[in-house]
Image 1 (cartoon, helix red, strand yellow):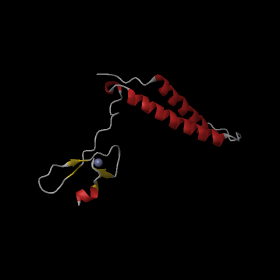
Image 2 (cartoon, protein in one colour):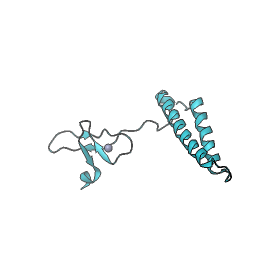
Image 3 (cartoon, rainbow, N blue to C red):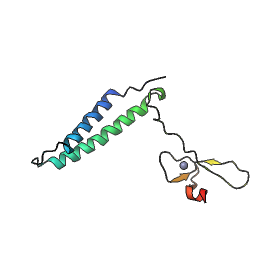
Image 4 (tube, rainbow, N blue to C red):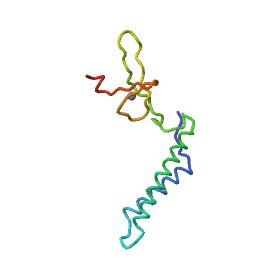
Length: 113
Ligand SMILES: [Zn+2]
């Protein structure tokens, strides 16, 4: 079993950016006229750093990524009438409408009704 070691540079950048956000929110000095701009900048830097870390983790071999990193495919499938085989949903991530590879869409309510 492999262990996840974060990509050092990207991980450190996220940690530093998070500390800047905390500094700009929890420890903001009311007399600082640039406090709002600094807080906004810190939030943007955190988002950019988080994206860079996610991209770096995506590049790791699968056995070195955190457990659960790879999204599991949606278990839903479109059930055609007759004896045709179910057509799997190909939508990734959290979604409200399922979709087949050829673009047919359906919602859970339609299936459950
Ligand atoms: Zn789905």
